[in-house]
Length: 177
Image (cartoon, rainbow, N blue to C red; front, side, top):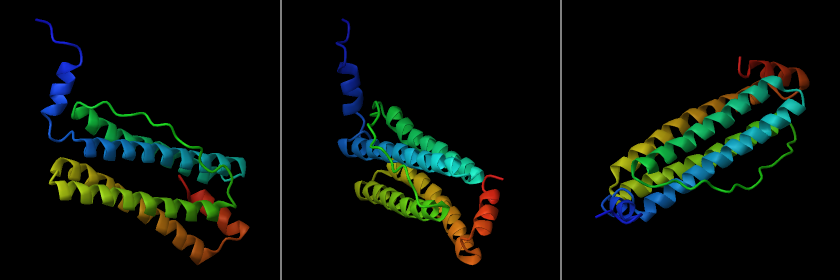
């Protein structure tokens, strides 16, 4: 007898305790947030390019690409659990900024927000005793530590050397070198 289409998928999911509705919701949200982060950084990169910050443009464009690879982590996890990830509709990111310092400070605030989201994912995983999800959350949190460190170092440079045109030019030259 031929299996009815969809039954196997339903049974596969029903037999997988690591593919709960809660996990699916958390990871689809993570995908959405990582892809939106990519869009934010791409928008910042476009603004930087349009305003002559070619080093910053390359740096923020690389951040944008990194965020898409982070979204893939969550997609791969869901696929490994037999769940098709949702491809999210995304809102439009901001398009204008007040300058390189504004972009740096907004990036820092954004990374704090993402870190809180990833921390919430880790808390939920531990509450549920889901060590597989916790392992993924830990991977995201390790990445966030690196992101926060890079951004704080850049803020330290702004605060140490100022935001006059020459200091910003030197900082821009440091990016992606």
